[in-house]
Length: 133
Image 1 (spheres, rainbow, N blue to C red):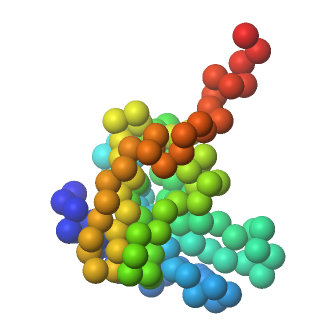
Image 2 (cartoon, rainbow, N blue to C red):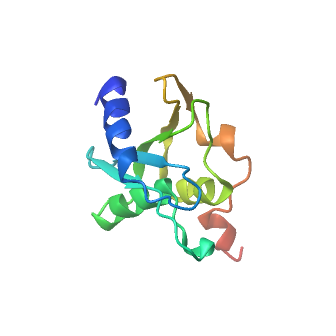
């Protein structure tokens, strides 16, 4: 899917954000290994710890559909500046993002930046860290 179409889809999707406490809206689209696109929005909760970020929402949908990895992540917030994924989302992304994959971050005015995961998180906790070797 071309980048402008992804932005347009994010711009529509962001309206589904449930963010009555912060009014900070986030939309995410991830491309699965099956080359389909999966959507997510942030969903707040009165118990703030139960809030789920858009990135994790979209990735969960993708993985629940049978994918084991994602190719790319696309993000948009309702702010007109670049807003980056939180630490929990970066850790979650690190579990599934293909080594050739990218994270695209958009502003409301259609500007975007493209990053490799290693540019946003230096030392994620990964599967091999669990091995007792």
